[in-house]
Image 1: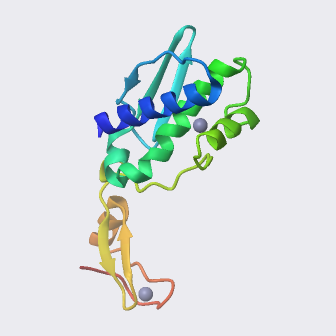
Image 2: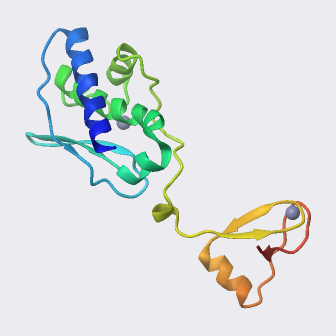
Image 3: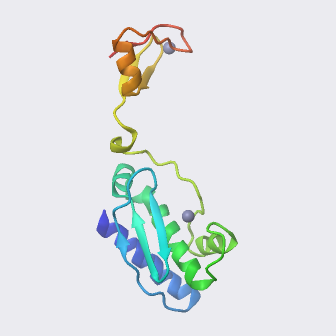
Length: 158
Ligand SMILES: [Zn+2]
Ligand SMILES: [Zn+2]
């Protein structure tokens, strides 16, 4: 996955160099992003780098994750082409995403790795499966009764 991300970063920068007819210096690509954020372009002073979340990339697969890689590289390109004070997802960034033939979405709907969502416990009523958090699961074990909103029957552990 790391080498895939590196290769998409490189391909995107090469493509941008052709489109804008200039060079973009290569910046570090880090893989230590955690939690629910898929990718980030970070800059502080002269330091600029790209950060990606490997558990999210692996949970969702390369094709789905590609959009995030191009999204973050486009932030870096925007910072190179324009002033520091443009809006992160403003006109300039959207134009770059268009030039790179990539859908400019600001939010993603990636599935979260189990390390992020925590353990879910499966229960069933008469009509469907329900996934409950450990907190609810422990309450049910101690005698709390949960009823399905749809079929009004009590949930039981699978
Ligand atoms: Zn963004
Ligand atoms: Zn039900």
